Image (cartoon, rainbow, N blue to C red; front, side, top):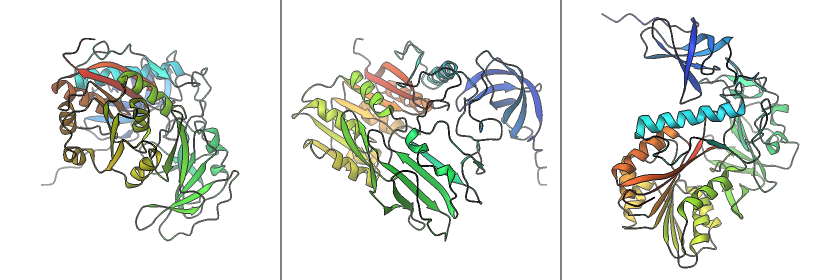
Length: 442
């Protein structure tokens, strides 16, 4: 006999007391029957009416939106963005929280992940528990920093630009994104129609006037003639190969950080907040304290941000090896670092390339892995190289905590941890952990 299909609970409402914040931009609550609810648009300590958006009877947990606030937290404000709220744009998680409360909630998430996945208290991680705003982002409640220098707009069937709803392919048409950087807003993507396009990505480089638009057409669609409010280069995503190809203007933008200009090819990775690259370079270099003549690894090196910063500080007798999987990013890194003869960039996955290098020891390591983290095998290899200090840059506290546990198994301890709010209004944070051999005094 086939099992009876489980009854969906989507649309059911529950009056609940909201508990602690959880990783991912929601808070934890429980129904009267004890079922776990992950509730968005709520804050700890509130009493709300939650409507289920995903889940069925017997599921381990349900997802829900707070559709009515019965008892509000003192940290609640009216969301400044008109597109925020249940069933609306999914780009921001904390528009309804005061800026200081957002950072406190993010700190609680980081602390919980460290405790659960690495067995570390904040004190053991050398962290005072604070989440630091980026320069210029400490604004009064109700004001929103314009920080997002790269915005990917989804295009609906009528050609209108918008943003995806939470955990959905549905598009919320918008007239303006409040967190978009001024250079992105100036392009006026939302003020025109985009027939036949699936998405339009707008990029406003930091430290230059470079602007770029990347078009992803629907199958068989023709590219529109792009006439925007500012000079802009135009690229398209290939229908067959998925690559990014030049239509008009430069196939890259120029980003400034650490006193250097970095070429970043179309679709290449660069930190989204305009202050992020400088903030992270400063944190990494302050933690590593590079010495002239040392050797260093820069893993998942992208276009060479940290490799360049290291090479500049290690001097003519120092050496840096960068490893990056993306072909275009490697080309950009080699271009960006051409004036450093003792910097080498290798293409490929870190776990494949690093063992082939024959490197058995190194002084310093920087790793900035993708959201999934580096993983046990890579961490074990790094721990065997005997680096005097390692800087781990992480955009996901769960992956960071798991990898810190692996580093501990390999004989390293966390010396300091710094946490930065480089994604205001969202649930994301950026962390920089500095590690050293466990036997070394503090």
